[in-house]
Length: 158
Image (tube, rainbow, N blue to C red; front, top):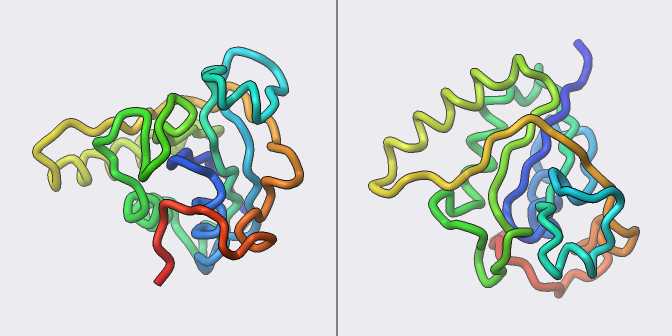
């Protein structure tokens, strides 16, 4: 079977990328900016609320890591009820979102979110939309926590 791709926004993309890289079945990750109104934004533009979400492109082997399991892993590292923030990061660029390139993924996403919603007494704030665009982040952001082991991260890895 061929690999599949999904785009996941979960706050600062540094920790999200490291987390997904540790999951068996994830083949490749790349951090970037998704579903914003302009082409090729810089990190500085995104920080000034360009409308893009810090997002990780996750390429995975669906035989080793089915989409429902990947989504459940994603839900473990986010607060799905937080609006435009995760951890200490606040702003529209830190919103949570699941952006799909394959329309066949939508029913799976909706079913997992429905299951997740039963665990909360507040509404979920996870944006679910087709991927409109994705622009690779600057090279220094790629695998940032591997290059900078003491770097800030809202995700705990212990």
